[in-house]
Image (cartoon, rainbow, N blue to C red; front, side, top):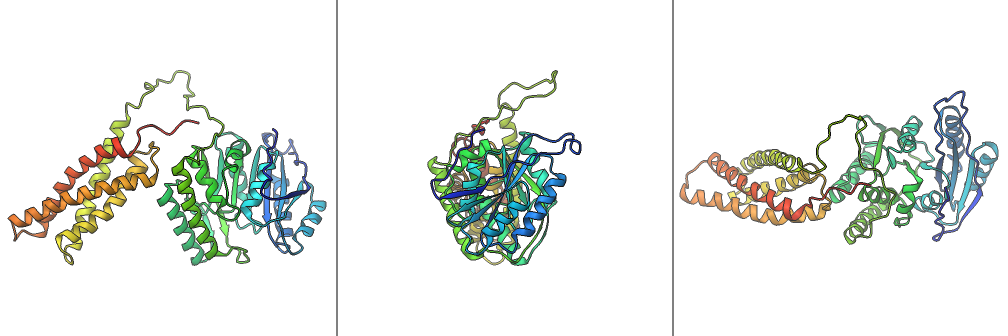
Length: 429
């Protein structure tokens, strides 16, 4: 494999690229052959670096079944980090050093990953907050070819974290914003524990632009947008309060980055020519397969849409009934319809039309237009009923509202399917 350096943005001086450490076959009879380059980006980490490298090196030497090396990426440190890295490279076989003349974790990863000759590249934070038991599960799906990128997740089922409420709240809010604005399916964008197959990573690196902490999110959004398979590993994570992260500044930069990525995807600039993956095929030689059509798609869409619509109708009716005690029929209907429309659209985008290539913004804008139609129809029905039966109870109003909502639901399905969501499945890589 010939590496493709990406060194136009900064000057990277490889102090020493270590050879891959070979696996002892007698201890690992089933050891893999894919080479793994584990990058540790550092900036002013002379205190933490020795403990990190010695711990990581010992674990890799004892348990890791793939040829490996460790590369320290020094981001223009102003203390003795570079000197410490050099001493450790002399002490520990398989440890190399790359020095960059500018700081930034994203810059370091894009530079070192882009120039690596390994089959798989990974990185972890120098504080080793993520438990190393997750390293092999992170790399194995990539070595087998099953997945393209792998990430550690502190929010996936089965993960265990020890951190303060402030960081917990900020992390959950940020990842929620990513899912809401970009429809992301990964749960944790910022855990410092990721790996990727080099052949699919390099085209993505040519599109990434962030030099700092948003790089992780940018890379994952590009991967999902281009149909790559992202594998999530639940991890154990313990917060180290000795951090170089400016939480407020990073959050601001992340929001700007999400806006930029949204514009990039809308313009088509986020499409990348990544290596193709064969279409799914049956393993059993005598498997009986359905015709290669989307014959069952309409049945799924109708059934799922009706189920979501039924839940939404009940939810809207219940919310209307609760709000009617404080507000007029028109206002109560407006609020209940607005809330349930957003939830309904997101549910349909993720479930009913899950193969659609329509971006979240288009889905919610299209639903917004249907929201106006639905509000006019349902409000008109309730006001008309009140004009005929002024003394009718709130329960009767609610029944009329539910009936009108059923009619609106049928219209919404037709418009969403034909005009808002594309019916073309996501391309098979």
